[in-house]
Amino acid sequence: MRHAKSAWPEGVADHDRPLGPRGLRDAPAAGRFLAEHGGPPDLVLCSPARRARRTWELAAAELDSPVPTPTLHDPRLYGADGAELLDVLHGVPDEVATLLLVGHNPGLEDLVLLLAAGDDGSDEVARAVGTSQVALDRVRTKFPTSAIAVLTWHGTWTDLRPGLALLADLVVPRGVRGSS
Image 1 (spheres, rainbow, N blue to C red):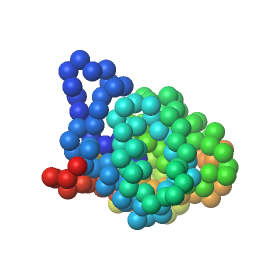
Image 2: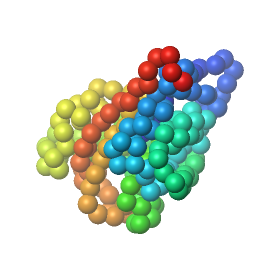
Image 3: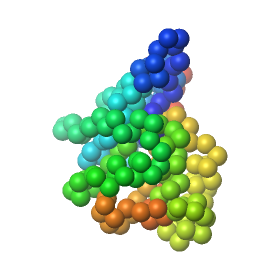
Image 4: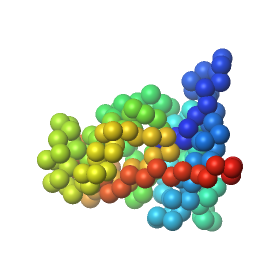
């Protein structure tokens, strides 16, 4: 999941940028999507950047979970490219079946394309694993704020390689203007 729309206040370092008004609306909508489509993940790896942390806080508040999802704020996610994010995923414990990665672009977009289309980005690889061509084209066009790419594969986190994942869905939950 890409963090929700951020603000660009003057004099604030990139790492410390807050969510903007649209981000404050969209992050809870992302949480509602997660609640309606599978519930809480087993683990959340979140960028330590303020906008990513706040996105997950607002999204997590929408989950109907009696036990809070463990969240690790991993500095490697801030500014990482697709290959670096894949390295992070290789370290996820095998008992984690569902992971939510909350981070930034262009790294997340690169990771989705790497996993769903392979090293060469070819549609041939994507078709072989059954990735939706429409979803893949949408990622290539734009991976907007609050976007959630749903990827699946069989195997362990250490075995995850380019081209092995199925891009099952790409959603962009949006909040309603006038709500917080």
